[in-house]
Image (cartoon, helix red, strand yellow):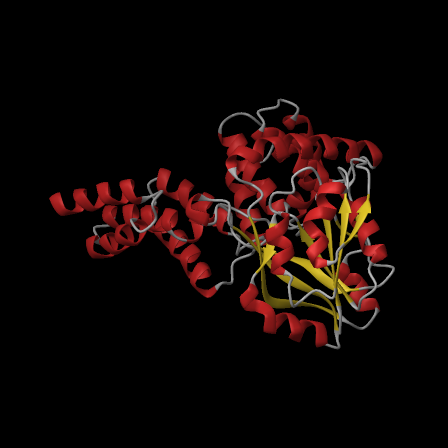
Length: 376
C-alpha cells in the first residue's frame, strides 16, 4: 500500500527540511499547500520531489488541508505539519499500519519537544493523522481542525475501525516565545468560527482557554456560554462526549475558587462529577489532591497523587486534552514526597524527592526538601 504525505507550510520554512527528511523511505508522494508563497517551499522541497500548491491563506486551516488531501493519489494519507517530524524508529510500524485491511484510520502519538533540552512541556496526545484516502474524509474548522463526521462514526458505517498505533510524530512548534503569537492567531480564527457557526461547544471552550491565557476579559463571556451548555449535564450527571470538557471543568473549579466565576454549583460537586466522567485525566486528580491537602486530608491527597503515578507508569491516563507533562513525573513526585513527610513516611518521602530531583525544573525544590528531611 502507498502513502501520500500532505502538509501546510506558511511563512516559517526553517523547520521544513527536518520534516521532509523524516519522511524518506515512507512517503510515496509529498503534497504541500503553501499558504504564503511557493518559491521558498519549492526550493526546499525540490530534492524530495514534492508537489507544491499555491494556496493563498483564507483564515482556514481545514480549507488548506482539504485542498492538499484532494490532490493526493496514494492509498493512505498522512497529515503532517512543517514543525513536526516522524520518529524514524517507527518505520516498521508504518508499514504494518498501511497493510492493515480493517483500519480506516490510525491514531498517532503526537509528542511535544518544545521544552528545555528538547524535553516535553506537554503530555503526548493521540490524533487520527493517518487515514485511507476517501473523498468523504474531510476536515472542518478554521483552526483546531477535525474530521466531520467523526472518523469513528464513518468507520462504523464502513465496517472498519479507527485503531491505535505505536507510531510517534514529534512536534516543537509551541516554544514559549512562539506560544503567545499562536494563541492570538488561534483566538482570532476561533472568533470567526463562532461567527460562522454560533454555539459550537468545542470552540467556545477552546476560545475561552486561549483568551484566559492572553488575559483577555472576553474569556469570561465564552466561559459562561460554554458552561451554560454543560450545566444541564452536571445536574443530570449525564457524561458528555467531548473530552475537552475535562479541561474546561478544571478551569471552572480554579476560577470559581478564586472568585472569578460563579457557576451556581458547589466547587466540590463540579470536581467530583468531573472525576466520575474523566477518572483517568491527571489534572483533575491533581486538582482533587490539592483540595484535599489544603483541607488537611493529607492521606487522601497522597492517595490521589499515587493514582496519577500509577496511571503514568501503566500509560493508561487519558491523553486528550494534553496537559503539563510534569504531572506524569517530577511535579507529582515532589508533592507526594511532601505528603509522605507530613504523614511521617520519611523513607517514602526521600524516594519521591530523589526522583523529583532528576528533573532540572524541580531539582532545587526537591533538594531543599531532602535537606529538611536530613535535618529533622
